[in-house]
Length: 213
Image (cartoon, rainbow, N blue to C red; front, side, top):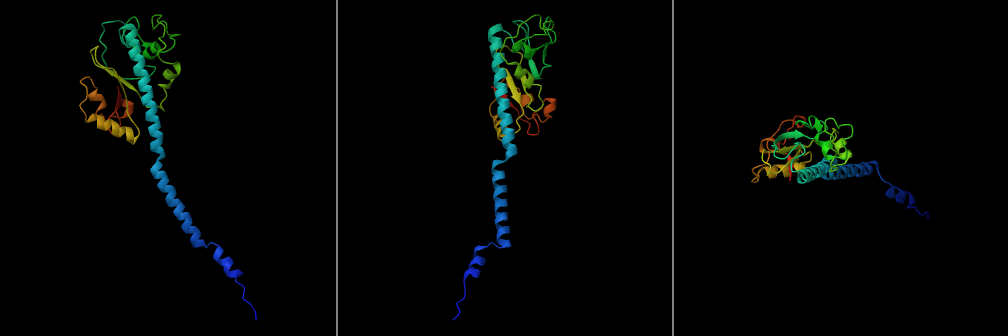
């Protein structure tokens, strides 16, 4: 009696059909989309950028406070007793002291390591070494969030360093702070509900900036 072989059937059972392969590929595609949605790489990039901006704001704020503690006036002033009023100034190499004898002396250079080559405008004043020169260069890089400095006309109030957040997380943080009882010296007119373009000193579409302290 002739015995029938089961090997051909077994080979067929071990193989994948085209439909099964397509199903597996579709499932992998769905999982990949789900993972990317959860991770949201653009949000992660923006969050990293915002974290860097917060760090830059902290460095600048600390440098300004140390300069004031050492001299008794702010780096955009030239002597004790001058009004520290600074309405909303973008931080870059073009930010200058306009008061004689320091006319057109760059504020960031006064806070950095040297004022080499700027002695005419800076009245032979040495840099205070509160900031590294790399920080000064970084402030002119368009890839970074713009920093803005604000101080009202009272010497005994806070200096604020602000930026427009790019990530959803920090935009939410800025929005929540806008709903709290803000200090009297807070730059409300500029940092809250200011939907002007960032390039024009605004806080972007969400309208609220992150301000330190």
